[in-house]
Image (cartoon, rainbow, N blue to C red):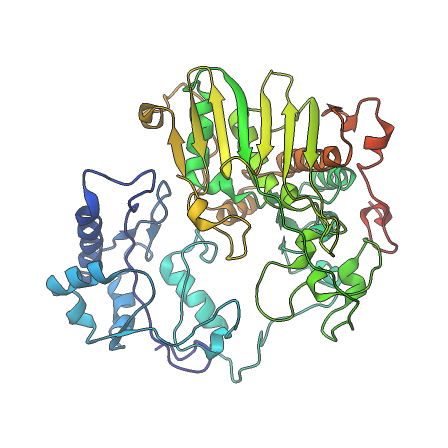
Length: 531
């Protein structure tokens, strides 16, 4: 039935979600592991009986409906029954499988149990999806939340239905120059996942073309670029969502709500844990690969000799070198910093206000191609008396400290990639507090309730249809990025800098103000756009 997954039959994996595991903030200690497996079995039984059950997604999110009302899930199960193999991957699901077997559920549909011992893909060796022997659908960032599971499955399948060969991206229109794409009247929205120095310019051009935009952080390379972007988006009335997806993680919203509603008393200090980057090796100029338009990749940045570690690896998915070079960004202070400063501002109620001063010390590499900051400390002072301290010496996350306690929030054990400069074993609880009662406190009807979403991309899609503002609009994203960028400037200038967040200028400091923008290499750059 699913021959149209490229050109070969594929094993279909049926997945039942389980609740929060031990160590997660919402883990049910009273129910324990037995309740987790029992709940999963209940869901499986509902599916098999043809009931329109709902899958639990991430904790705190709304469930995802499997199929349209009136359409039995047996339709989906009939697909699974065509295959005799259940593939168990590296996740420890044996406990659940054995319970399913005991219930007589697994043998009813699955006659054979095997393990995945063939390499599917890794950072050392990438195997394209069409060459793998199974098909996977990931929970996060891969499903459209406004579609049912059935629609999500069939969307990709139908697009490959007419595929006759193994040519990658067959039938997909590709552009060497994104500006040609922006001329396509049939395209309503775009996503920008380019290197940092290529964020603001295509976003501005997309806004001018009337396209809605999903823009990865950081919002801009400089404060000036960011302001140009805000003005373009506002004038064009397009929907722009910044990829500060911590706002979709329930623990960050819960922490911010508790702080905003006074559960730790008067907030006076915020401590943000943020690592620096290590120095890198020397690298000699290399021949430019034939598959790279290097001049356009450089864009508005200075023309420098090509080196692979200064751009992208030609093979694999290790952390690209441009993240560690100041031509193209500012290192971790913008790379991860915008996430944490955005989350901190959410709890501080300073999303559109910014600090009154910034002061920093930082180490920079003495040699090697990579030149962004290493170890550092930054202090921001706000007009409301709150001090924000940022350093790699703090646990990675955001700690709010008030007159009556503290709350710490982080991504927990989550890492974006194996090359993240934060070791998994050093990760902390996703949500913690000086007193457990703080976390169990309910937010009353008349108290402050923050914008709640299930998915950052889904929220953007919803807002495209409704024309409401998304959870991370351009002005809030810009302000969080500005905090990062002036912190980077303070690393370069070893003195306390006074900042005017309304004028977006340093007060009486020409040297610092000169770093709010950069010279741009023609014909690229936001200064050369016809806005």
